Amino acid sequence: MDRKSLIILGLALTVGPTFSAIAEVYKCADGKYQADPCDENSQLIDLSDVGNVIKSSDNVSQSVSANTAADKKKEISTYIDNKRISREITKLEGDRKRVIAARDQRLSNLRESRKYANNNLAGATWQQSLAQEQVAAAQEADTLVSSIDRQIEQLKNEIK
Image 1 (cartoon, one colour):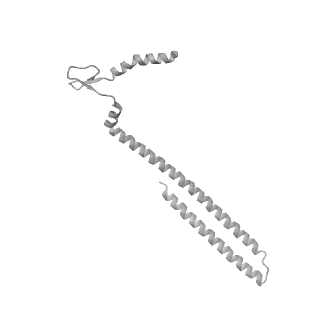
Image 2: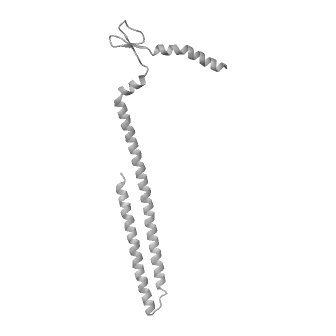
């Protein structure tokens, strides 16, 4: 054995019995506790599972800490849910802006196409067709935007 192991072994052998003596506790007749017997009626108390005794007798602090942990867990869960909802709202607002931009671009393209219509029956029919397409494009975009707005409103109501 090396020197370090011998020192540790020597300390363990000399300190070991001291710990067992410290673990002996006696209950005296007057209700006091001490390391030495008070008289022949003193009872030796077994403290081998003192950690378990303390835990079971301290139910109030356990329930308080359990409630605190449960409250903390609920608070964290609520925070995470709110952040997720906020991200969804931000995404939907971006979708809304893209739908409006696409609608505006499509309407602009249709207006530009109307300039090339001839001044005859075919041109008039084509202009009427372009006007109907503009109305349809605007209605489609408005439907999408109102759907997105409803989703955003629902998500805002979910935030706690």
